[in-house]
Image (tube, rainbow, N blue to C red; front, side):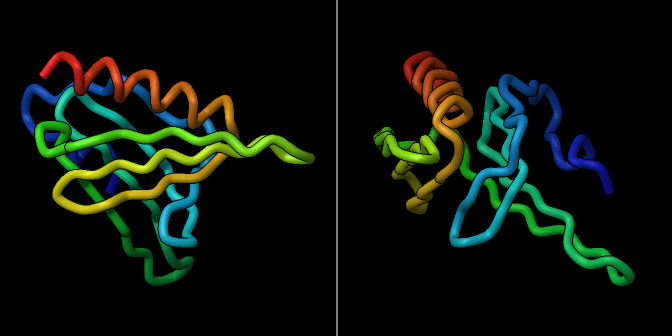
Length: 108
């Protein structure tokens, strides 16, 4: 089932991560909409299943951004809300994601 099938009415995609990011030591495809953060991953080859994690933007309590420079430039966003989400990935992707989230949270 495509990711678009999981969007609710009037939900608009604001950001799509170009590369997989890491959450709970697993790689996910990340989408930010005007209402939620969606982490999505298809699993399995023969028996396909989907792994989806969602957090509503209205429940976000805080955002924290950290960068780690070195051989591979990595960044991390810590999102607090209904649950704590720590997302890691390439600096340019995570930084863009943080900027979009910051704008959307400030609109609420």
